[in-house]
Image (tube, rainbow, N blue to C red; front, top):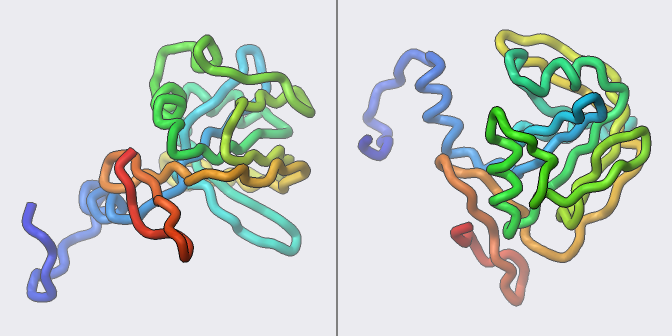
Length: 179
């Protein structure tokens, strides 16, 4: 694929073109967990702040995902921001057909029965306030009730189909680092 130039004409915005374009957007890697029998969890790069007053966050989930039935019924979810060193945890929760909570995943039952992953950069316990179906996905809107503030460390990012992060320099963030 050639790099884009200003003289390249625009193309129709189909699913493949949108996916290609979005690969250029760096996204924070999160794992969302929900209580249930069994508990559910999945890797999401769609987490975002919607409002600060009142506090509302969102994430998206495919309606065909094995996690959707549990998330669809959950009153609370956990959103875990992963640290740069947690690529394996991100891959575990992105893998279908496995017990994502089995060893080596370290976690505990938190408030409202929500699985809380150990040693993440930060986490939020959120009350689900709405689920909005849009195409193949649902946008889940949630109100943070408890937060564990970020620990020292670099966030795990997803960019161009792989994991990456940022390194801290003397005057702040110095640039990307391969994960």
